[in-house]
Structures are given as C-alpha cells and as structure tokens.
Image 1 (tube, rainbow, N blue to C red):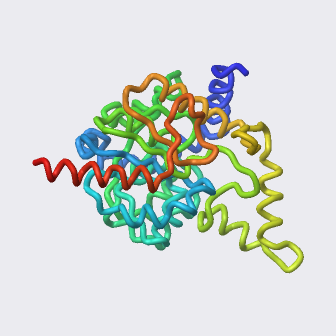
Image 2 (cartoon, helix red, strand yellow):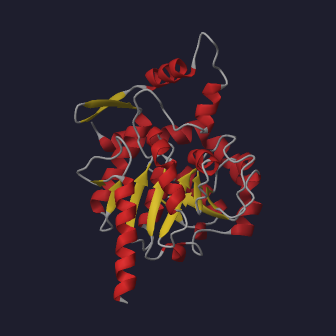
Image 3 (cartoon, helix red, strand yellow):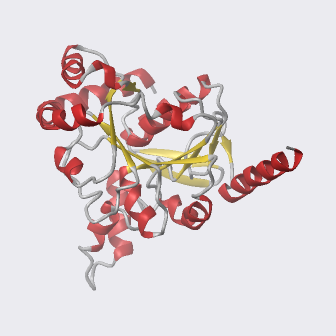
Length: 302
C-alpha cells in the first residue's frame, strides 16, 4: 500500500469536499480567533506532564472509571477528542483540553458544562459548534500547504500555530502533545478499528443509532449493520480480526510514522490501536498506578 498516496487522497478529498465550508466557517470564526488567540500560551501547561489523548473508540468504555479516579493528578493532562467529551463528562470525567476540527454542525457540546475546559479549535471548524462552547479556546491551523490552504491560514493568522493533521482529530491531538515538552504520551480509546461497534457508548454517533431502534431493529443489530457498511480493510491482532476505514487506516499509519520518529515514550491502551512496533501496549490501570507509585517514591526520597 502506498502510504503517501493514501495521505494525498485523504487531504485532497477533504479540500475538494469542504473547501467552501472551510472558508465560510473561518469568516464566522474570525472574531473568536481575534479574542482567544492561538496555541502559544497553552504549550507551557504541558511541561513535564503525561498527556493522555482520549478518543471515542469502543475501548473507551472500560477505561472511564480509571480516568475518573486519576483525573485530579497534577502530573496528568487529559486531552479529549470532541466525540469523546460527552461520554467522559457523563461518567464524571472532566478533561482539561478538547480538540475539535469538525467542519459540520455536530451536537458535541450542547448541554455540557465546558466552562473549565479549554477547546483546542481548528480555525475552520464549524461556527455552530463553537457557539455551544462556554470555556476558553485556543485556535490552530493545519500543517498542510498549497495555495488553497495557504490562503486560509493567512486569513486565520499565521501566528496561531500549526498542528499536523493525519486526517483525524486524535491524530491532531497527539501531534500537538508531542510538540510540547511532555514526559509521556498515552493513547486511550484511539482504536482506529472496530468489530461490532464503531464508537463508544454515549457518543453523538452512538446516540443517533439508539434513536432508530425498534422492536424489530434492536441496538445491537443497528450497530453491527453500521460497522459492516464501514468495513474497508482488515487489521489482525493475534487471533482477533478487526476492520477499519480508509480514513482510520491513514490516521493509524500516519501516527505510527510520527511515533517512529519521536523520542518521547508512547504508550497505547487502545484496541486494536497502533502496532506494537511503534508503541508500548499497556493496561491503563497498571500504567497509571505505576506512575502513582513512582511519584510517592520520589516524594519519600525528597
């Protein structure tokens, strides 16, 4: 498979489909961009911390209790994808940061208390989505060149900062985190593959399926049918077979390439997630408790 062609097709497809929406959204966002600014003031907040990039894959469900238990630890920084915010907050987890690059109006944030969360917002994201956010914001552009993109970034402001994209909101969050002086990067719920269910329970996607359930079309059947329609590629993890889309596959390969160049340790509690050639596969509980033990030993020595 030609990775560069996959990336190129994805970026060109995005621009071809969404060029008009990008420009319209940006014009509406300019006042907020002028008020809130870019990434520069946020980057120091990550110094020395372990960043957890939290996606909305099905494996998120089993980690919600752990994320709630450890969320007040000062050495951790939770960075959630927009799709993951609702199930997190409804489980009592309040991430410090949320990434969003959605250019369509999607009801990610309505009704959620976001006053104490910072939105890391793509400069051309949906203005409707921005209007439902009540906390601080920091805007960024994509690290993609070309005449059409360059005009957008110039209008948004080159001083906002640029983030590598990889085609997914979680790839952008991971790229941002690796650009800060973090100590570790941990991926949670970044499955980028699926079997019978596409997203975690409680996400906008999951709730939209639940609204179509009937006695003759139960939730499980609708989820399986949705997943079957999205099957484009296979991912093998031992004796278990998963499926993925071209967009998820491009994001997975892009991340693996990024992690292969990084000097920052990357750990993955997602499933199937990234290949263990590029990340250390972990049980999230074991990892978080080991950090806790290391901090306690350090305090005793001090």
